[in-house]
Image 1 (tube, one colour):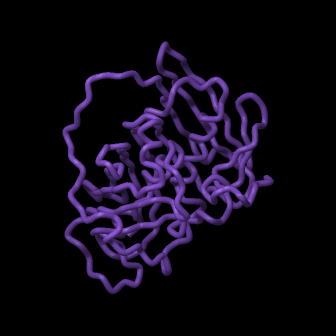
Image 2 (spheres, helix red, strand yellow):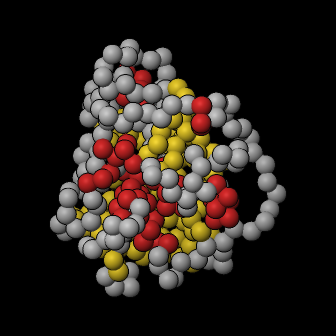
Length: 273
């Protein structure tokens, strides 16, 4: 694929070329490389991009579930999109990403037309120091995809040097934004919902084979709310509930700089250790 180098690295990485009414072609550059294949957040954002670019889309993203069925190599891939059902104000999508004639990722997306309604929340934004008072993480020693984020970790860091002892829990609170800075939209919010180190890395302070198997993200904001955020840092908070028989879960929240809850996510992760 020919991608303009004037585009932000994020936009280059999620770029797709139409290959028919419901088909797309893409290729992940090395910028978001993870342990095996690309960073999961960039894969999810790419699939969401196929929906947002589709001329038949109704409304904005409300929920997305991505199931990582197999590894993705450094080669072209295909994305297929299908509208399973369209209602008056909601639309249900089914997507598949395949490579070398094998399905590597499946996903479902719910889009909807959001209308004014009663609003409240049962959770509050964590009280943390402002982003500007927290030192950015030095990305040296971490996997390459980390370099695409400015992470200012308040607590719950993973130290790849191995000098930090195991922790009593894996709660992480951090400020995050794209690096270089990029205005927030649904695509970058989807990717950022997966920006946390694997919880088992934080808990045990050691790197081991691990990978997300299924990730679900819920969007609590509309496009206007995301536009107000601009390119300021988001506050993220993540924790695990249990590690058991080679799997653990992660629950996460992403808040705007103004204290609005923008997205929540839940994922299940395989680990070996």
